[in-house]
Length: 269
DNA sequence: AAATTCTCCTGAAGGC
DNA sequence: TGCCTTCAGGAGAATT
Image 1 (tube, chains in turn blue, yellow, cyan):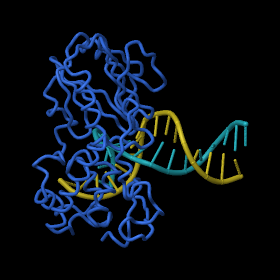
Image 2: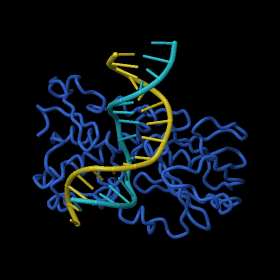
Image 3: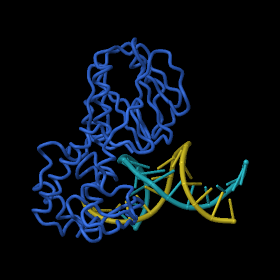
Image 4: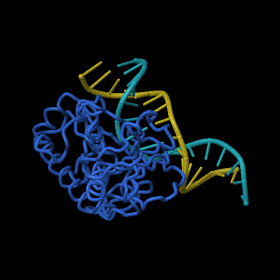
């Protein structure tokens, strides 16, 4: 499941290899993603230079002169950079063909999206309501405290709410609250200021470490065959029934809004 | 408003 | 061996 660090890793990869190059041709083999890819999209992008690549939350932004290609990797999406003329395999739904390589979008479960906007992308309805970037100055303990006070949802769902802070998914939400020693079901409006400071600080720390490690490779996610190494630093995700790294008690798991939630009953309150 | 539920999809895993 | 059923899950949209 690509979350912010995996998308950031992909972004850097693309910046390095395809930024500044011209799209010779775009091919869409399977339009049916989260939303249907518009038929006219290839004709808009063809022969335009990919000026640069950005990211907002988990959205990748590919800037062209006439507009921006917005890509979301969903649950199982990834982007591969391949030599010219590499034949497509199953689930490889779209290509941006450059003269020196192919940028190929793959997504077995098709929860991902390829969207076009001619407006500034931050004005697009999918991006305009997103909360602050967790690695930006805007994401502070004070901000988190303010927004948490009017919400009764659990702290885990608070962190996973993209309107509150964008880019944190299930894996990193589990890790962050474990490292903050906060119970995942703790209602948001019972957090005090110092706990919000801790959560903001640890969120930044965990995401930075994960980016530095090249992201987390879990089942579905891979970028160009490269793997991320952050999974070696995961304390709770995927470790239910195994001993807590802090106290050795066995980690518990429950389901919160359909998401596996792993935590230590002894350490998290 | 905020909270909850529904929805899309396929591969892996488990039961019989 | 093989055919079920279940589940994982991002997040927008619809509903309460």
